[in-house]
Every structure is written in C-alpha cells, then in structure tokens.
Image (tube, rainbow, N blue to C red; front, side, top):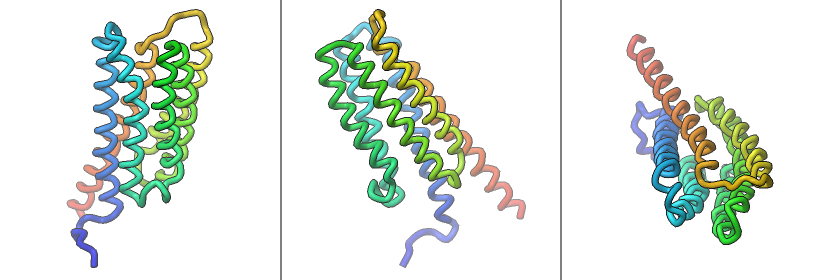
Length: 195
C-alpha cells in the first residue's frame, strides 16, 4: 500500500526533487568557482584538493540523483557518469604529481565524456521539464573538454582558474534548470487553483 499523499503525483515529486537537486548542484559549483578565483589560486594545496573534489562530487551527485529513480542500474547514463567521474578523481590525483597541464588533459577527457552522458540523461528525462538546459550543458561540456585537451598541449602554464569558467557555466545551467522548474511548478499550481 502506498504511503504517498494523494496530492503528491509522481510527476510532481520528480519535479520537486530535480528542482532541489539542481539548486544544490548550482550552490556547490558556485562555491567551488568562488574559491577557485580567490583563495585557491594562491594556495596550491587547496587547489589540488578542489580539483580532486570536483569530479568526486559529481560522482556522488549522480549516485544520489539516480537513487531517486531506481538506482544506477536503471539509469545507465548516470551509472557511466558515476564511473567516469570516480576514475577522473583518481586520475587527477595521479596527474597532480606530474603537472597542471596533465590535470587539464584529465579534466578535458572527463568533461567530454561526462557531457555526453549528461546529454543522454537530459534526453531521457525530457518530460521532467527544464532538460533543454541540461542538454545544452552537456554539449558545452563536451566541447569544453576538447578545448581543455588542446589547451593543455600549449606552452602556457595553466591553473585552477582555467578550469573555473567551465564549472561556472555548469553552475549557470543548473540554476537555469532549477528556476525553470520553479516557474513551471508555480504555473501548474495557479492553473489548478483556477480550475
């Protein structure tokens, strides 16, 4: 027997979860970006921890999100994203012992793959609403990954501030999705009240 309240339709519950999830993803990314452009750029040890934590957080977030809709087994794109993000966190630790250019190559490969998996997840969730922003974010992430790999092969020294704009765009797309779902829910509520 279901204990779900009568007015809590599964679609509404899904929208409510995604809205909260996107706001949390925005907040974490925004804090990461702020630290990258301020404290971390002059503290290599903090920057190193943050560079490992970023993909590790993405892996955890995918597990939590997939858990709300049947787990990783039923959400293959998120399962693959989890695996790639976990491997990336470990690879960043190894790359930090070599150079920041090596770290940028790892981030580039991760951004490209994670972007493709996010795009697939967005297409699969299209009916949940606001997924156009997640699809755009996935495409942009894939393109940023290619740019990172190319940039890493150049002569310029790189730092965490070269990765921060990528995280900032991710934060922006999560915020847009959260706001879009909030507005959509408010409109649905108004329509139900008027009816």
